[in-house]
Length: 356
Image (cartoon, rainbow, N blue to C red; front, side, top):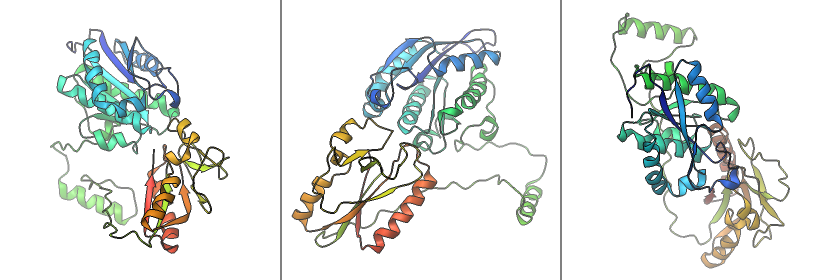
């Protein structure tokens, strides 16, 4: 990596997925990594914004990899791509933005995290509910973005502001000021007002119902304790719930392919298996060709019927389905609570939850 002199031209490498790399959508998510010389897709916007910020930059290369290919071959992909990126002698690597695309977020975080031991600054951007945030926030600078691509320019501007500071070796301010996620790092500083004064002022704002912000936020850990194993399956009722989007043909409840606002409840009465005529995938976050060919691959009714006879449990006559792709945590929790109430009412003792 070269020096950070304000008068030199900075070299940037940009990482994107198959969609922003111009290869295709979900049907190309298994695209193997390759490199394009110069900017591609959102890289052109990034390059323009860097120059507007008086940073003389050049995106020397765009590295592209399919989302599914990356997460399925992560070690091999990183082993291949990190030397390639390093070979361009970048002053900064920008990954994404990934918005709320989970696999893309994991790829962006993985790339940025792997560059740190080499001393190459890297930044990315994600929506707060992207799994990449929880996975990499402590080690990677992640700018907070909108959940969908319409927030591209806002995310790009935030990334550029932070990127210019990294290029010039300037001090990174507190996360809120920089528009990025907290990394769990606490910095000591001198405040003009003593702690007791700030505490009383905050308490008074709280009493008056005015907005206030604590200086010491308590982290929230959403942990679910596993239930004890069921010793004997004979005679119990087991239900199937899926976030893989398997619905009756025609998607009668019009469940969205992304950012679902609803779920469906569908009968399994008299069904020994699913097929392409009776069911389909409504999910927009994976290539559903194989799920449409055989919906049992996501909702394994055929296997459940065999096990029902073998082990003596009862298959619940209804299953629940939604789409996990980009669905907010709030909606997912709401769905789960409503479904759980019905399952308990129906005497279900266990649930098999399938995803993709």
